[in-house]
Length: 380
Image (cartoon, rainbow, N blue to C red; front, top):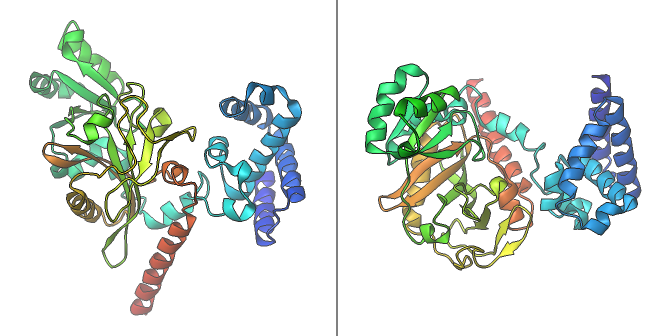
């Protein structure tokens, strides 16, 4: 605990004095490495980093201990100074960026103070728990959903599967597409067997499958391709879009999350047009979808005005949660709600444009602080 306190003080001192020369970065990286060893985390942290590094460095580079140590040292220095994790270091191409450029990025560890400030923790479970999300946003789903908690929900499950023998299962508390699975009743000896498997995993939701419409469906028909729209509800009650992008699956995956192997294209919030190449988690550019050959640049997202209207409505359902990443799917019925994220990841938005978004967070904070100050003065 003492080491952590000293480390935090040292980090604040380094940032305050803007120590970022190669010599300082090297010193910080080596010092961080020593601190990890003192806390008993050195070997485990390096093993995890090496596993990620192997996906980005060549075999020749990985075989060169000097190169590996130099890169690992810079990874540690970046984690200490900017809050990046190993994968972000490579995804954001930190090895090519200056200190001034690195400071502009929203990272795994520097974004949470903003979320804690903008989003009331007493309400975040409405978005973190899929069962609670459905209760709150039911009217925007545009499909049938059943919340399952325990064995008492078996009869409701039987009725649901009569209408939807093929459905999607989502654990209540998971995220990033983890645990999501498509079930078909014909693959099991009985509904009771299938229900036992589902309820064994704890609280969950089972949903009628989303039937997508073109042109979104044709990009990758095997997955539900969703628009991620990150919006901030200003103190004046306006849902301001910070960034948005379309996510698609790859390789026949049922999920479109980049962390699960998907790709994303950045979309202009004013026009709804994709204007840059798509990128996958490894940073590879895609002008055309690698599976279907569909062109990504220049894609006009359909009914963009309707999407903006839906985002505005969603943002006002829970005004206590101001910054949300809304996931929406396009169907023959129009845009429908998929889920909301009270801690939206920022990798896709910064990966697809290679420029940091921290200035947007700082601007939101200025708006928020100004409103809080006004409220305080009025109370006095």
